[in-house]
Length: 294
Image (cartoon, rainbow, N blue to C red; front, side, top):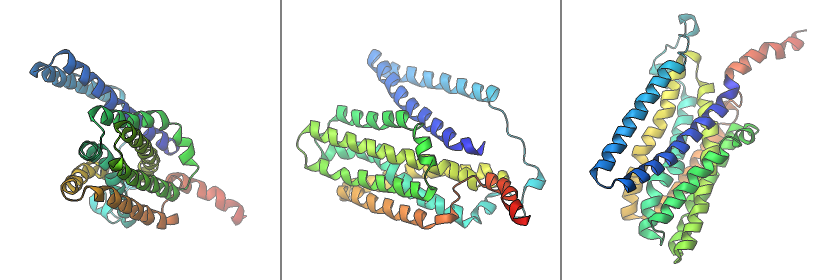
């Protein structure tokens, strides 16, 4: 159901973060209990068994969507060429690729090595910082659905970009602190602000992509949505790794500038970004037009 998309994406996000935390915990106990090569063999075997079990559950429990009939397609075709003609969608995806890189990837992939090299935070503190981020997302993601639902999507994008910019800039003072405890506390706060931005971002982006997609192109639109995160895993570490060697502080102030620019682009799209599912809008149009016709 279109009105349940935000909740569905929120639940998916919660499950993913819970899985990351649980997987790290299980892996840590396995390695601690059986140090050496055997521990990793156990982990890979456990991973294979659980993945196969998940595949069986999907095949047995998840219904197959109805095939879209030829009548439901439009004259623009059904391939990725039809998606490429949607310039508004491509603009949304491009701007959000920037937000994913600076707001998701830089935190998870670049902050740990940066903190280790340029702050007094140790490995245990870095673990606490990551735990704070994932735990906050697990706790707050679903309750945030109602809050974000009251906002215009362009405003929610602007909020997410602003939160990302603030959290990116807030990393820099940690390099001036000599106390490991104080630096860890600051970066835990940064992790929570990052989490707030991630929550707002995911609650808007996923449902928006689904709402913008024609029914017969939904799979292709969602595949580009997923590709946004895959590309960020290549772009973010590549840029961040290069800057770690040459200009570490530029990661954070440069990322903040990029986040604000992407948020500005999305905010300027204004009413071109739908705030409600397009299918629902079309369904309500005749009822709204009927009194005027009378």
